[in-house]
Amino acid sequence: MTTEARKMTIARGLTRLKTIKAQLASVGTDVGNVAVINNKKRSPMGEQKVAIDKNHNQALEAVNSLYQKFNDLIAEFTKIKLAIDKANLTTIIVIGGKSMTIQEALIYRRDIQDYVRALNNQYARAVTAAKNEVESYNRNLNTEGMDDTTLNKVMADVLYLVPPARITEVNEFLVEFMTELDGTLNEVNALTEIEVA
Image (cartoon, rainbow, N blue to C red):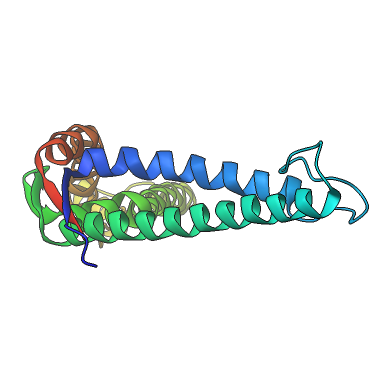
């Protein structure tokens, strides 16, 4: 038996994934509540006014049905997620003037963004430390009677091995990226179709 592929937008697929997650949690809770019982008591999953063996058989069928539902939901979740991931690997978007796949943008947001922020923080720390060191060095110099040319030669100054413009460029891209990302993803997810096998 072959099942026909369904088409949906990425946005619809993401909504369905959220629904499936909630359903999986509910099935898990149900299984946790009824999967194991005292064999001398009736299960709430079977009729209460029948013989205990019949009640247990009905409960076994109901629990098996829950497991089947769980497996079906996992299979559907996997198919939708794979279709979305496939689309994310090939769909190109433009953010901050840079073309990238949806997957690259998601990696940047989930993983790389924190490293960029850490780089900015470390750079700011290095600038502050260098400025403090220069001020301390210059304070301890005896510059009495020196002309401007000599002062320029002996006075320390901050040397930027990484120019501030490079860090500014990274920061500007990060701000633009974060500003544009959600809107761009919402737009492309509403338009991009996926095929769920």
